[in-house]
Length: 157
Image (tube, rainbow, N blue to C red; front, side, top):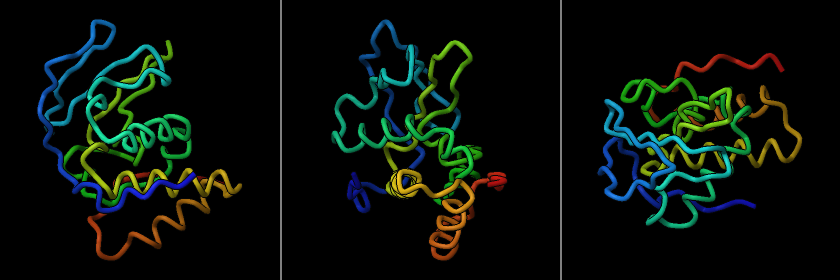
């Protein structure tokens, strides 16, 4: 499934704090202005998605499903500098804890570039491409006309 997200919204590291964080969720503000919220697992979406376009929630679900691949894929929106992100995964998921809890990041809700890279990477992975092949595709597509990439290591295969 490919979702057309381009142009849905611009990229920004500023979001408004949510007033309605649920008890089972822990929400914090990151220095970049992005929200971070901890949920019990990757299937439990953060509350900051509640009032957004359902397509954004779908991208977060896809990012969770393909988090291991997105660890190897850089983001080209400028979040490496503005939010200290190390890969495209961090636009959506700051951390997956050993106990399975997920610390979500709201950055991806504001950024079409982040969402496009995650969706393209997931689509290529579903087609059987290796992380290295996906990385080469993303680097080639986004190297001109976009911000510098996050400092993401190159996958071995």
